[in-house]
Amino acid sequence: MSDNDVVLKPKTKTKPKVERPKLYKIILVNDDYTPREFVIMVLKAVFRMSEETGYRVMMTAHKLGTCVVMVCARDIAETKAQEAVDLAKSAGFPLMFTTEPEE
Image 1: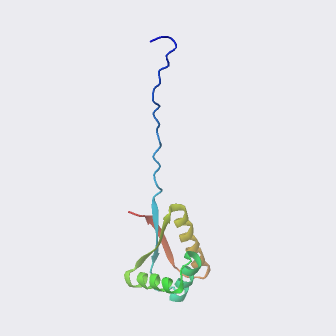
Image 2 (image 1 turned 135 degrees about the vertical axis):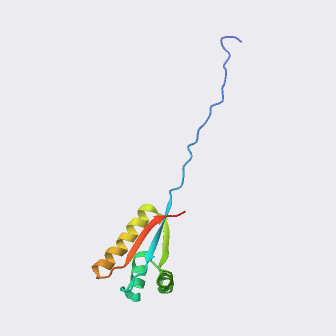
Image 3 (image 1 turned 45 degrees about the vertical axis):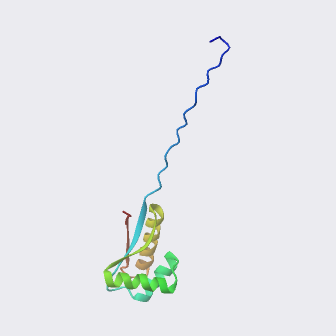
């Protein structure tokens, strides 16, 4: 090889592997004190559900004890759950929503 020869080496590109954020479930917990109509109103207002969907979610929680309302990113799940609980507290009801990681 002479001094003018150029040696080309292939560059190795490293592409960082981006993981999707973990999803969280928002769970409606049944209680014996909050009126059904109020639960449906909260589901419609906070989670943008239709009347029929809200009724089905409320009845599932009523029969089984809990019901998954929505699955989304952690910060959204915690914000919506807290908004729903605050709305219930301001009306004087013990309605409870919890969040937990999706498996």
